[in-house]
Each structure stands twice: as structure tokens, then as C-alpha cells.
Length: 322
Image (spheres, rainbow, N blue to C red):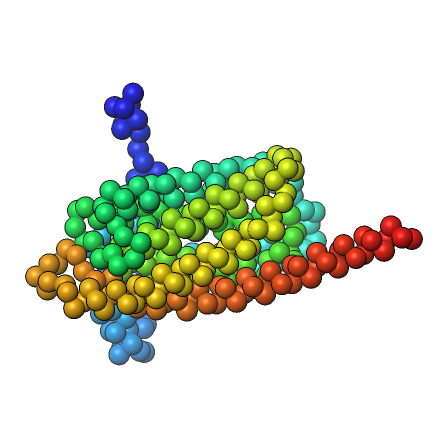
């Protein structure tokens, strides 16, 4: 039984293989476009283009070099494609009937609930096996860090699957739900995690991935239950946004720890050890300020949602009186 389970490919390996295959298929079409843009940038903005290329070559993790979809041109293209899907889709749907997408919703929510559960548990297990602490972990560039790097890449690429959230809203013509918060969250988190995987897909990155995956187990599990008619879980809805905001606070606290321990680890680090390095402090700074933006936007959503719910209760109460 154990041998049979061991022979089953892990999700991260499956997705990495798919990513590499996708890269081989699209490279003949995308590479000439990217080369043309790079040449144009070098011609018109030589200093800036050289600085970007230098930064990419010096910042890239050893693990990142072996992972697909790490080219910033591809990342920008995916985000642009997402926005085209949203705004182009809304325009196309303007005069069309909304689609019945229950089957897609069931598949999407079940798939992401299961994938999130796997990422959460697998990340925590790998962190435990590698003796990770809550905070203060080094970036592991050795072979022992490769399994965690693959899991962080899987978490990063799962953000593209979450784009289907928006596609469903477009097809159902739920335009009110496609808010600035929604688009900012989905578009920016993909870019942020590209940077994390590029620079340090081990060490401190595990905490955010595990915590966010847990929140998504609850969230997509709730959506799945509601889609199949299990209304007993409806009370969870009011807690989901609060859980997300709590998550942001925890990540901000971790970011402060990352910045502090990076300085401590830099003082204690043996420069001869090329495989274990202090975690990049700039990622801690990015995490802190990014979580501030998320906390502010979600807090505003939480307040506005509470106001809408109160107004609906008052309207229903007045209707009964009449």
C-alpha cells in the first residue's frame, strides 16, 4: 500500500510538468515578442533595462531557475489576460443571458478546497520535517529546500486557478461582486507570489502559504456546501471576511519578525555557507505594506457589507409591518 501511494505523483510535480509543457508549446509564439520588447527597452531605456536584467540575474533563487512560469514577461501577460477576460467578458455579457454555471462552480470550489487542504498540510509537514520555526528561518538553497520550493511554486500557480472565481462572476453577470478589491486582490497576489518564488521560495514564505491555504479551505468549502444546497453552513459567511482580516494581521506580525530576524541572521551568518542565506528583508517589507493595503480594503468591504445587511433587515421588517 505504501509503495503504491509513493508511486502516485505529487500535485506540485504534476503542475510543474504541465507548466514546463505549456512553456514549450507557447515559447515559439511568445519568445519573439519578448525579444522584440527587450530590444526596444534596451534601445530606448538602456540604463533601466540593464538594471532590471541585472536585478533579475542576481535576485533569482537557485530553485527558481528550475521552475516554470518565472519569466516576468509571462507573469505580466497572464495578469493582462486576466483583466482582458474581466472587462472584455463583461462587455460581451452586457446583452447576453447569464450562463448557468453550477457544474463549473461545483468543480471549481471542490478542486480549490481540496488543493488548498493539500497545500496547507503538505507545507506544514515539510516545515516540520525541516525543523522550521514560526519565524527566523533561513532561505534554503540546498537540495533539502527543493520540496518546499515546489510547494511554494504550487501555491503561486494556484492563484491563476482562482481567476476562475472572476470568470464565474462574469458568466453569471454578477458585476457588483467584481469590485476594485476583487480585481486588486486576484491580480496583485499573483505578482507578489511570483516575486516570492523568484527570490526565496523557502524559509519564511511557508507561513503565508500555509495560513492562506487554510483560510481557502474554509472559504471554498463554504462555497461548495452552499452550491450543493447545504444551507446549515450559511452562518460561516459572516466569519469569512473576519478570518481573512485576522490572517492579514498575522502576516503583518510575521513580516515584522522577518525584518528583525533577517538583521539578526545577517550578523550570525557564515559567508562561506552559500546554501543557507538570511531571508530577503525586502520581501518582509513588501509583505508588511501589502497586507496593510489588503487589511484596509477588506475592512472597508466588511463595514459596507454590514451596512447592506442592516439595511436589508430594516427593509424586511418594514415590509412585514405593511
